[in-house]
Image (cartoon, rainbow, N blue to C red; front, side, top):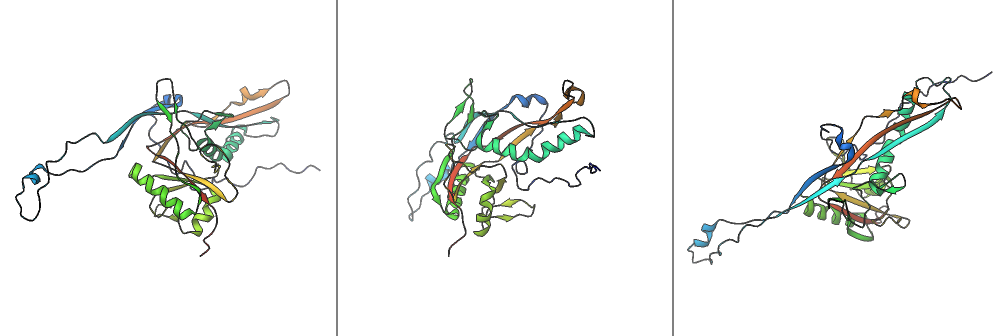
Amino acid sequence: MARQLIDLPTVFAALPYGLWDTIQTPSSDGPHWQNGVTWIERCPTGDTTYDECLSDLDSDATEPPPAPPAKTANVEQATRGAMPFTVYAEFECSPVGLGDAATVAGDALARVEQQQVETAFWTGVAGGQEVVYPHLASDGEEFDGQDILLQPVASPAVTGGADIAQALGALEQELADCYHGQGLIHVPRSALPTLAAWQLARLDDAGRLVTPAGNLIVAGSGYTGTAPDGNTPADGTTWIYATGAAFGYRSDVYVTPVRESLDRTSNTLRMLAERTYVIGFECCLLAAHIALGVPTE
């Protein structure tokens, strides 16, 4: 007697602290973002000055300061862009006994979507080609035909597999110098036990994973840990990255209608579910090579 065919009773839940959990999602204002987006980035350094009247002080205790220097531009401006990529899940099946094929296809996408998005954002690779801009692991700039910056270089804050406390401190200091606000620390999940052992990760009041400096930790299940040049690090080490705040757009899930999925020659369905993404970040792209492991003292 044949066993009964059932639907899985479990509800799939994506891992927490992933990339999409920690980025801002502005209004898309139409579908044109799916061709990519361009923005004017303004990253201020700032400066200080003093009132001119101080140079007129008549004091026996101190020499009055000279007239203040002229104020100069201290906001770096650049035109940057981000390109789209699509995550999909496809399977073949018999139409007999399948039930709601569209629901099955959507569920299949949900199970792999987060990991695939994070891998593409770390490596820049989609469909076997480096076409995802911007991404994390990068050792060279990329511009489009209009001289718009698509990909900055990941600037190493620490190399050589430093202990994670030293490396994270250097990374967060450079992030503070570059961005001046709450940024993102991108780590593969293999680094989480090390962060926990060194007490360098905690939950804030909103349930987000943060560093001692208050930057959000993105623990990507799809993050590969590779270096800016794409090389795999030595055993017991990994690369981590820091960026300014990130933003993203994503489409609704598109599922191919069943009537368009039927292959009548084989009487099978080729069900496809997909979603398009564009992800960008502000100002900084920094990297650090860290050693994994627990404190020895």
